[in-house]
Image 1 (cartoon, one colour):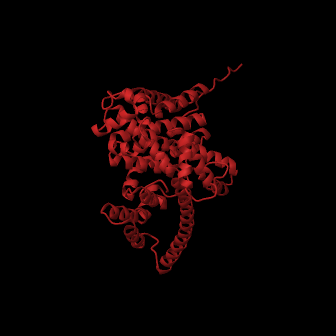
Image 2 (cartoon, helix red, strand yellow):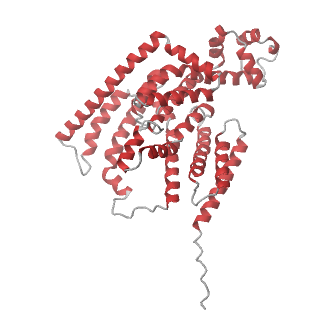
Image 3 (cartoon, one colour):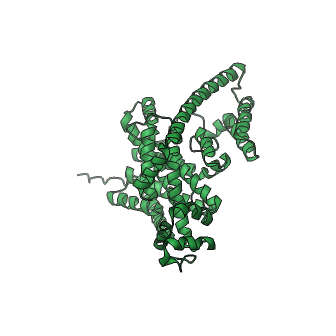
Length: 429
């Protein structure tokens, strides 16, 4: 629910206030990443069910169609009201208020309509939850004020920049570690607020730096900036403004005077690109802040599931970690692919390749696809996972890897569909 539009919890509204990007835009760019995550869970569940040879329960439960016919409007009607009002330009608070009223109205066309007592109980429950959230946000506000006034936030951002050495990958690893530690004692939204306050500026600057270097390498430098860049790197003065090697563009940007870096960024990149970099940084942190729920040693959500299922808590936590690996892979896609900021065609391409990679890694973990796979096939699947999502690979190579994956999957499906050969009977004497 935290990552799936249209609601996305309180964290999405906090992100909107941090970035200045509308909640509707945040919800729109979150659709494909959320679908990737839930599809990866479905892949893992199916592969595990195949490995354990589990069959569907033939019990008398109602079908999905029956459930939707009886209660679907009560669930999807209020969501439709919320999304429609926000698309029409109403504020989130106004849309949420009408959606709450519509919950009562839509319940009247279901087998269990809400009466006065049910409405009062729901309002009381909502008020209690609101008070808990308000107290949490007040406490987090005190922490943020202390971090901002004391300068700890700037210091932490500088530390991330120094330790990562301008590497976005290392910075994401450090942020993931920080969110995991903070998430052991804080709810998801609180962990996101703290980590975003401390590290989002540094991560956004690194992503912006990559975009500026790419622009310099492409020769997209305004004339008024060419002289400033040439001051720091006179050996490349004749080439600035023309296409050049990326390594040369990096030298040119790093040699520019520090006090002019912000001006250079604002002159070379459009405002939309700068905002996109900030949104990307916050989306990465928001997704990584979810990991404490499913990552041992402290994963309260997995432990709660273990109590319900009667399984061992730590083993359940490890299983949850394996199932939720998209929480770690999708943020990398945010940083190194156009999953958030590209065209629809580019986003769909990344989605297809990422889904294939997540299926590969699930099959490699479990040693099973539609049928059992051997050690060499598991190694091949792990290699295909890397090839499908590695950002610097040629697209032709990635689609070749995708074709190999499809071939392996079809071969496995065909193998699984063959009936087992009956054992030979010994000749009767």
